Length: 168
Image 1 (cartoon, rainbow, N blue to C red):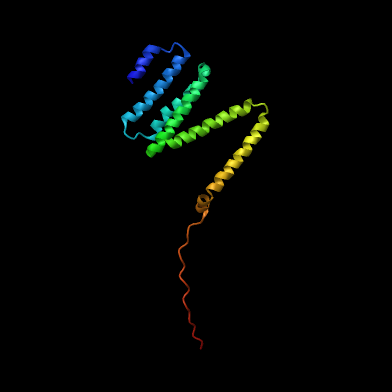
Image 2 (image 1 turned 135 degrees about the vertical axis):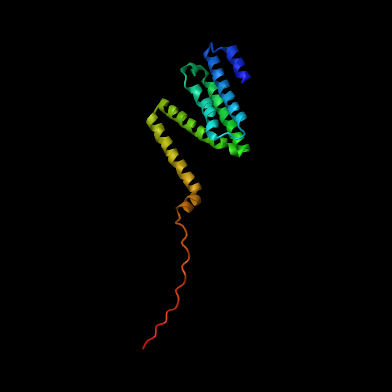
């Protein structure tokens, strides 16, 4: 908290780069505070500063000149979350990192597709790779998926008993 107050006093957000640094410092400070206040804080409380750190720098047009730095910070944050999630499974940061990476990769792909020379052809090729990926995932997890589709086991039926009929 002291670092944030000192940076706020020293930088005073005179330039867009100062505002970006203060935004990042504020996000990391809040992230640290959430972890210091509770031994195992709920995921919702931990997600707020993570989403702020990853998404907030992209919201302002003033930060456009710092796009490489923002991309570097985003990649470093997601990598750090993945490593921490590998070490401490209870944090679920590995899953958060993978989901956020996938979403950001999707947005980057859409942006790249819209700026390409032939967006329709690019979209068609990407859709083909998407179908190929989905097929591979289904094939890889086929046994698990089929086990979920099996009906529940019925209780065993007693074998029929002999019936004797007296003929008169």
